Image (tube, rainbow, N blue to C red; front, side, top):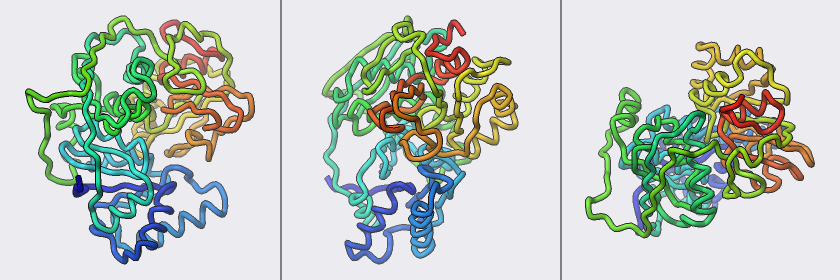
Length: 391
C-alpha cells in the first residue's frame, strides 16, 4: 500500500545520503517542511573536519528548505528528542531513517525505520509504499522483581523470540507487566523490537501516554486500537515474575542469559546511555546503585537529551556520578555505533546499556555485553559483571 507519512526524521548520520538522493531525484522542495525533523546526534560535536563539513552541508540544506524542526548538536538523541517535543503521537505514521524509530510505538504510533533513498522519496512526496506487516500479540504478565527493568524484559524477549523471530511483524504488547511500565520503560521495550526483526513495536496508548503528551503534543491525534476480533500471526504469553536481570553476550542480541551465568566476567568499560537507556529514570537507577561508592573501571554516562541532562543536574544525579568517577559526555549516541567517544580497543570488553552488541560495533576486536542501567552500574563499581541485587 502507499501511505501518507505524518512525520519524517533523519539524523546527521542518514540525512547526508537522503539529501543526496533527494537531489538526484530532481526534487526541488520538500513536501512539507513542518513535518520533517532532523536531529544531530550520531557524531556530536563533530569529531573531525570531514564530519564537520558534512554536517555543514546538511545545515545549509535545512536552511534552504526552511525546515524548522532542526535540533542541532547537543539537543539529544533523535529517539528521545522526538517524544520530548511531541512528535511521537498515537495513531500517527512516523518514518525515520534509523532502525530504532520503532521506539515511538511506546505512544501507540506506527513508527518504523527506512533507508536513505526511501527517506528521500518521503522528503519529496510525503508518501511511501509499505508492505503491511502481520502482527504478533505479545502478552507479558507478572510483576518484575528487584532490579528487573524494561531492559531486562526486552533482552528476555530477544532471547525467547530470537533475532529473526519477529521479522517484518508488528509486535503489540499487552499484560500487567506492560501496564505498570513507565513511558521510559515502554520506549526501551519498543526500541528493541527491531532487534527481533520487527517492523514496529506498539503499546496501545493509555492514560500514561496521554499524560506525557499533555502540553507537548505537536498536533491533534486520534488513538488507534486493535479490533476486539483482531487476528494475529502469533500470540505469545510470558510471566516475568521470577525473571532475573538479563545479559546479552557477544556477539548477538539474542545470546541472552541470566546475569548469574556471566557474573564476575571482567569488563574494561561500562557505558550507560543511548536511545535505549539514556533517560532520566535510567540515570537515577544507576546513581542509586552506585550510591556513595566509586566506579572501578572507566565508566561513561551519556544522557539521551539536553532536557534529561538538565533534570539530572538539578536533582544532583550528575554531581553524584561525577563524584563516583564517572565520565559525563554531551547528549548524543556516543560510542554506540563505534564512531565517537568511548570506542573500545581490540580485546577490550564493554558492558553497555545499548541495543546492539554486534562484532566490531564499538571498535574492531571489542566485546560487548548488553544489560540494564542497574546491572551496568553495579558492574562499574565491582569491576566485573555483577548482579545488581547483590551490589
